[in-house]
Image (tube, rainbow over the protein chains, first blue to last red):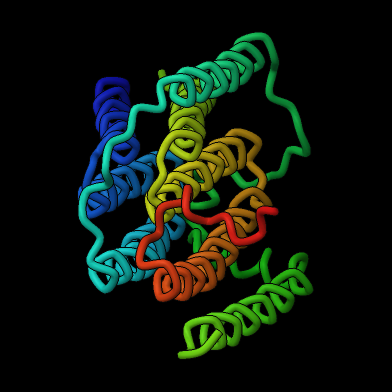
Length: 167
Length: 100
């Protein structure tokens, strides 16, 4: 049952990713991307990370995609004129297929190792995912957290300066 | 049974599609969305490995990737608006101001 569900969601994710790269209208691409984000949120729930699924939907599908759609509609972008750059498409297809082949090859050949922790699915269910994330973030990763806040401040100031009238 | 390799394969496919989109599309906003697709496929890898290794660190990294993506969205879209004001289009073929 879980396997069938996984393949169904993966199919939807890949098809909507295909729509992102093939649709002529940017609005259709944006809607395909929102669909992909929802599929990834389903994957996060299946991987016992419900808080990540929630912020995936709220931050990505809710905030970032609304910002992108807002800019698309503000600039009133139509469908892009189709020019025939066939060699560009061929080289891009070769490059992306090389990336895909490399990654799949290493996934098939390699074995997953790394620093193992003690957070099992049972711990996540009994303690709570948000509490585990909060404990890790505000003890081990406190300095990166503060640096991220500075990054967001810089991004806000930069966006305001760039979007002002005369640049 | 679904293993971590299945999730990583889905992630690899999405990443390759994002690469193809970045290399072929000419609309800057669509290129931007393809970059978001690539970032999300990496997030899926992080969470799958975090679940597999029973370690919380990967999910914290996903958090930071989302922060960087939000900052990138704000600055990138402001750049596109400024560019559109000067050139009346956001076709990347027109971005040649620094060309000699």
